[in-house]
Image (cartoon, rainbow, N blue to C red; front, side):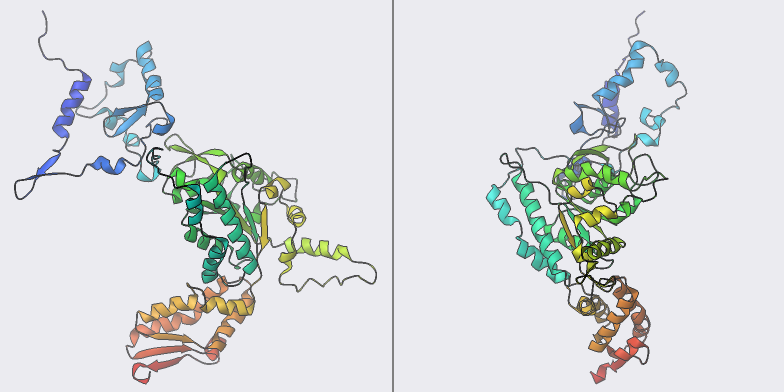
Length: 491
């Protein structure tokens, strides 16, 4: 006897469920008119769908199969998943015999099958027909010229004239190369840079200012955390992962960004050959392909590759790499080379001639850096090498008051919010600079000294509404007196 009951397919059941659960597309307002509600999928239009099993984005697979709960699976994974059922190796009835009633398959399989977090989603690439590129001449005109880049750096960085000029030209040439592409048989090479300078001389600050001026994503990585693949620490590709995160997971934007790798001197070759060098020469070798330009698969929104994180392919061909380091023992290598040039006879130099030279790093050569422990292949991919000057007392005084974001201007703004005028005597500024020179940590020492001398003042001012002006005196800095407090009526 035939069973005349309605038997619906799984697809039909899914459609009925969606009809029951999906909210109406329109809602009635106070006048009785209907208004469209905001579609939650509108925010997802700019992101690619990612396979819930292999985590490959939609652009890397042939097609995606949509599933309930905003999930999708690529055709390859769908085929692999269904093979055991087709061949009879897996019994579907036994698989779901313990499933609780009124629980969907997705809920039964656990929370890990849910939606991908927003920070791990890849942005879609715009179709080529939608992108209206300007002619090359117009794109090049929009690039700031070297003198404009240097003028902007002058507003924030005191001194370092040679370093700012070298950076301005190198950055301008790099982005001309990016905009022009491969126009003919002549291919322009990358202008990666190596900055050498004592701590606190402004290496990181210059790179930050440069990225802000050019409006490109910037990633700052520390070379001390990088290790050879398979060891505890960050893999070399993690620096590209940070850049992708800074570009809001937009691969096209990240491929035109800047990566600054600080403390690059810490990955020099170890002189003790008895132990494995997992954070020295091997890291330099691994960075060669990054510096020159290659396609690298990096995890999106995570530090390590795993099955639950989507991967993005980033081409480092147009990424500008800037490496910086203090190279503390490099001065001894330079002294040894300079003393060998004339050590015998009437033209012989004194052995201690260069001991008091504050700008000895300005005399550095590629050979000196190679002797320090950087391999030739690594240095060959950093064609622009320059040194920063050691900060003098006069430069420290200018750093205190001249840049747009000067430390004194920050504190003057803080006290201005309390309607108090803050002033510094010239002698006080010189005393602060002298104290900073003793600490030997460059411009970073200025902030620590200002924080210390301003602590009591910042604590007492909110207590008294009659204070109108505070003058920091030289005697207060040297510990022989106090600041001058002027009431509002005496101003």
